[in-house]
Image 1 (cartoon, rainbow, N blue to C red):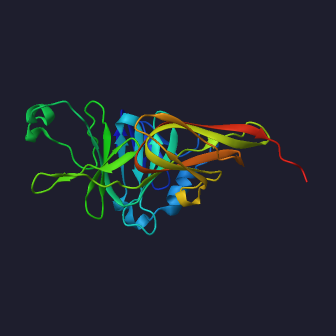
Image 2 (image 1 turned 90 degrees about the vertical axis):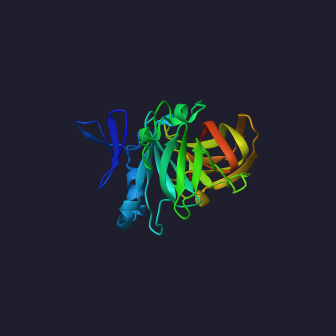
Image 3 (image 1 turned 45 degrees about the horizontal axis):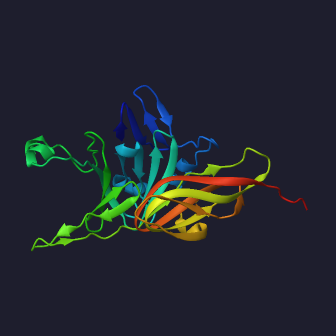
Length: 275
């Protein structure tokens, strides 16, 4: 159970809920299709014998509820179901390593030990709790295999690095990640739509973009991949998948640093011929 404002978010025995102090409400229902696909997918893949290794957290900066569940064949989670509280939509992050827990980290301009965090006795932060004084800037992810800690800022994930015995800074490694968006629905008309363009704004090194007209969480099953070389400033990019479907979801697989500002798919009416 994690809290945001006056509401509590939790994984129940048969659904994902929010509790406002008076009533329990499911948040797994798709606002457009009214189907409980997130719930069904999560429980179909869940290893119920390892519930003790499931956990959740709040990313205050983006108003997100992160739910980490262990799937069959795993010991710790490699994927997080992310619920955007403000928008009421779900998306999914997949990582290359098993994650043991998450926390939040807050930047400050303090210049002395006392200004930075107060006295040692004042500290009450623990793994699994959100440090939300002001606004939480980044997420910290702890990898299960070696307890290395990775810093995640929006969609950028990297190890913070370390100093060796001589004080030389050693840059950390990147933790491979994949972002799968929510479904974009184009079924207002009784005809199929051709998703001819996806426009997005991003910065970073490079990113592979692919699409699916099905409800999938496996990045390898997405089609029409295209790689974009990015730069260190946000820039608008155009991806042309040209797929015929009534709904689409997009997968982003970055190389190194990657930050996504916004995304917008476009569809044109596509008449199908009758046999």
